[in-house]
Length: 295
Image (cartoon, rainbow, N blue to C red):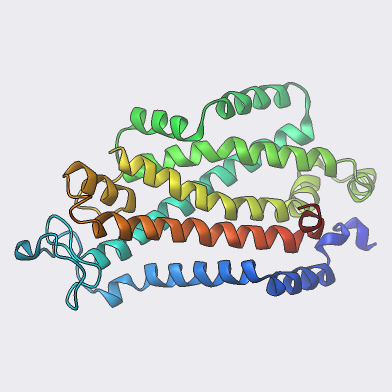
């Protein structure tokens, strides 16, 4: 009867083995450590630097290099760069998490419908997905952000729209495979309705690849959000955002004379992308050991 509820890879013993494989992977542990560290720094920013980064300025210390007072230096307005990076990391992570959640929710729903019901619904969803995937992701994000207007909300929407076809195609491929599996055929033969089959059997069996893709997508979403901010389509000053900080440095012409103003935000973007990529790779190899063998 165990096969009526879930496929073997979702049984507790399999999950324990996946956890063991994850903890044995050096890259997975590094990715997990970096991810937890970055998230903690972002959450503790108000405690570590308990003042508003948009208003705390010292015009006498404009473009000061790193020192004992300002560990990462200051920007063109005399704001402490360490504080800006901390708060900017919070905003970048918030944008990435919300946009990936949006893409995951809508894309998974569309993929479930297309893969299970097939027919004209699958063709329409497939056409929309192919059209969205035909555009380079950053160009599609720029188009959406331009139409909506520059703001944090538009960045979240733009990056979320870019993620939708990725999750739609992944979910559809999983459903097409699972709907023919024995445990799904069995519950269908017992008279289970389509909604129960989808949400109690097919969706739980698709969670592993969706979790991996969502983790990897956070890194790409961070890059896309920073790119929109750099192009002036993201948060507006004085809101600290990593891409906007880079844009401010280049626009005002002190990127070369004060390199710390681009080095520190750029380094944090790199660390965020690296952390979630390593974490995603570790999850992929632990949840699907065949992926690690194929690589």
